[in-house]
Figure 1 (cartoon, helix red, strand yellow):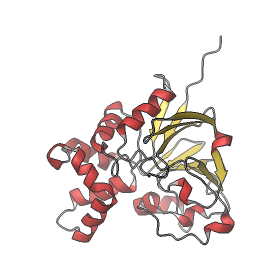
Figure 2 (cartoon, helix red, strand yellow; figure 1 turned 30 degrees about the vertical axis):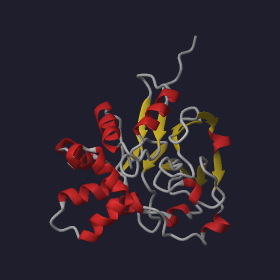
Figure 3 (cartoon, helix red, strand yellow; figure 1 turned 90 degrees about the vertical axis):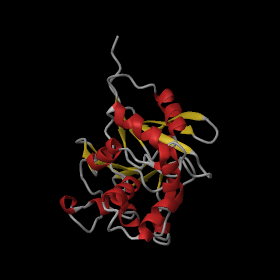
Length: 253
């Protein structure tokens, strides 16, 4: 009997939904040989950010820096130089829920250190993981955290892949905000897939895990507890580039 091949599983933006993450992982049922990666934005918006961070950190799962971790880390480490408007923007973007998830609204030092250690991308040879995407106007080697954690339409609108031999997998932008997609669908562009299916958003609730080894999509809905397992092909929709140029770049943070 042939042994099952170890899987590489990529998990999209969790945004503080620990219970939903546990449901998703129960559905995936990873073995000790499987490799699990997180695309960042573990925190903010949902009610259990501290629990999500504890779980991912203590499990030693590789995780990328998301724009929400970047915002929080900047506020903590540069608090004397951060304008009040920046703090308010983070609180408005889900930071209040994150603080509420921590005892006495205090982020522990080990969590701050862990945020600081998060990479902005992971190169897995045939796939390239990044939170938001790549600014096509700059060489990859010159991309900063600002590009890799925040870029949106400039990347989504590329017509040629950034890499000839690597598939880029991103989170950051909720897929149903892209032209031609509905809640829960995975977005496909030129050499990239987007798997942030909007776990925190009331129009969706879907948290996605992508098994890139077997081209299988696992999803758990944080609002309804529904789970589903789909082939990558049936879960994926091509972004309509004829419409995307009319989409505002001012999306939800």
